[in-house]
Image (tube, rainbow, N blue to C red; front, side, top):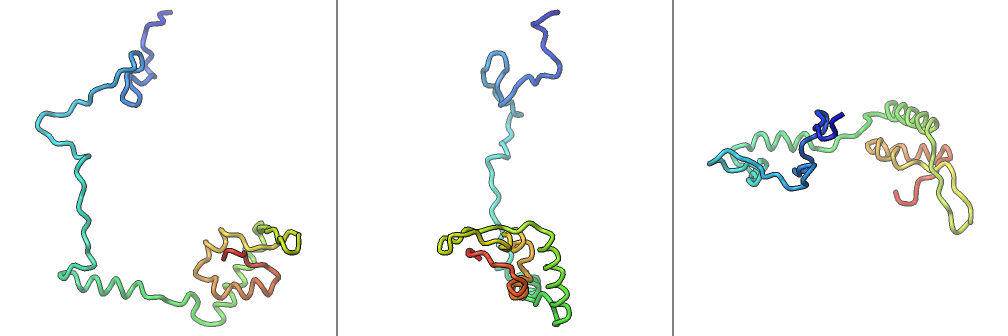
Length: 137
C-alpha cells in the first residue's frame, strides 16, 4: 500500500493551512473586486423615519401592554394549568443559612422564565399551594 497517496476523504486544507507543509494558503480573489467582508452596512433607523410615520404608530400600538388573561375564569384556569405543570416538574432546593436547612418546593428559574406573562397572578396561587418563591425573583 502506498503511504504517500493522499486519501480522498481528507481535507486538503484546514484553517487555511496545508496539512502537510503547514503553510498558509493565500486566498485568491478575482482581480479588481473588493472583498465584501470588510464592508459594513449602516443601520437604518426606521422608527424615526418621517416617511414611515404610519408604520411607526402601528408598531407602537401593537407594543402596548395587554393583560395576559381577560377575566377571572380564564385566570383561574391558567393558574390550575400552571400548577399542574409545576407539580410534574422537579422543583429546586435552596439552602436557608438562618434556619440551617434546605428549603424544598422552590419554583424553578426555567418555569418563571417560560411563563413570565402569567407570573403576576400565578405567584399568589403557587404560594397558597405551599411553593416557595426563589430569593432572587
